[in-house]
Image (cartoon, rainbow, N blue to C red):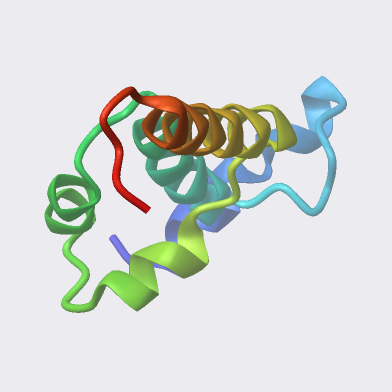
Length: 90
């Protein structure tokens, strides 16, 4: 069964008031995004969806602003902690 056939079967979205822009491929994007947000190794996710290149998987990843904020916070906290660690040489 091809993508066009799957998309046509996915047309039931109209009967349950889902956004008409929603397509079967949206599930693939969601899968990739949720795996990344749940902390799975990006290489594992890339292999799961069969991409040859990480850049392709990155295109599919649409992480939330909360995830971006948490990731940035984690990096900033680690940087500050390392900078304030006793015995650190400048």
